[in-house]
Image: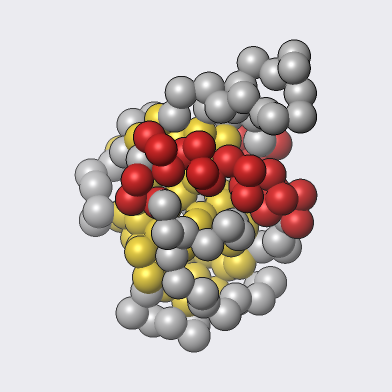
Length: 146
């Protein structure tokens, strides 16, 4: 199991608006996220996390309001999110949208959860991934590849 510490980052309302339109399409391919709340929790992790082998990768999802859209591809990785207020943690899915600006910031990730949890910017958290990973001990920031 991999445990990565971090904190809750500023929440991006635009991301949540886009997520509402994506979740139904994603759930058709990956039903286990069908009951997730249509809000992403943004995390700033202490380590870089690069996901090369997700649990699911969607087909391109076309935007309903853009004809020229090639479609958004989204990777999902199962995890568990624990916070100061919920030390036992909840099931979570790391959501990695190919078109997201966060793609170039591997310390910043967004997760979705089924149940409502109270979070606020700066709250300490732990992201647990039940997988083996490769750890690259770079001096400035440890990098984890899953």
